[in-house]
Length: 144
Image (cartoon, rainbow, N blue to C red; front, side, top):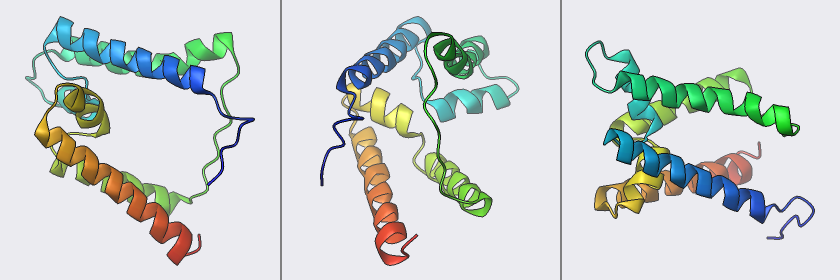
């Protein structure tokens, strides 16, 4: 394994991590809820969920952020090497996994691990192992 030093960006990655941590910490302090994206989106779909305004504002901020960034700098080029069927299957599997694991990578990986939740540790290890296995199968066994 080699590092592509020309595209290695530790400072922007650190800044992004700090911003994610700040947003998650401020959200839990202001709202008393975990900033897990699947939970926030799910609460927007429930007719009588509490904290819908906070959820709506958080999701709006996620959608607004790329446009704000584009005002400062160019957005990175996005390259997707999968077709529509592969993306649909991936989306369904991620949604199923988030539902089965009672949360997504942001809820368990960012918020749960920072609270030292054993359930979040197990969920994050399962997410990571599934990702590693998927990349291995797709790249090395299927040759895609």
